Amino acid sequence: MSQDTVALLRERLSTLAPLSTEIIDESHLHAGHAGARDGGGHYRLHIVAEAFAGKNTLARHRLVYAAAGDLMRVKIHALIIEARTPAEV
Image 1 (tube, rainbow, N blue to C red):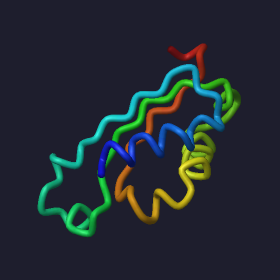
Image 2: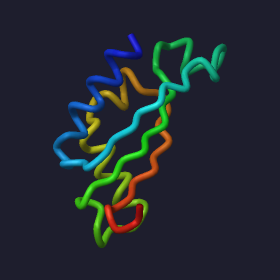
Image 3: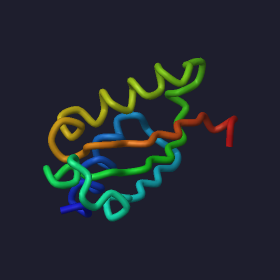
Image 4: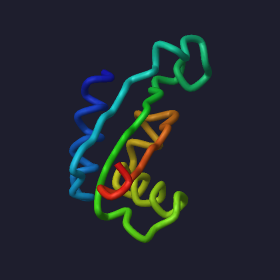
């Protein structure tokens, strides 16, 4: 299931036209956690996109959550986000 979730998230994030996207499944680190028992995975996201230019951290995270959509309610329990612009890498 996690590979499907990663592929779906990558597809959804394509709306931000990222220059790079790295999604790491950390679900195994949360075995026994309530969110893991319910089937929601834990992921770490590193994403670089011009869409984040001029936006603070909260606004960048909102863009990511909006792109992820219903995955955040169904397949993803936790998402650690590092969102940068090309100039910040």
